[in-house]
Amino acid sequence: MNPELLKELVTMRMPYGKYKDWVLCDIPEHYLVWYHSKGFPAGKLGMLLATLYEIKLNGLEYLLQPLK
Image (cartoon, rainbow, N blue to C red; front, top):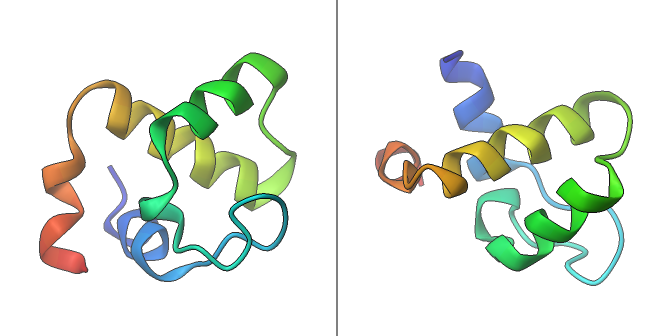
């Protein structure tokens, strides 16, 4: 896992939608599950959301705690 990705998950904010301006790591799991079924957006944001989905799905949120 790239540590830079983890840093971005705790600093980057969602640019649009229901959770606009939320830090990505704080987005609820149900929203990520919805995106997973719909398809993540293209580009870096989609990659970050997909990574966050996998982290939350596998119970690895503790990896983000020291970075917050």
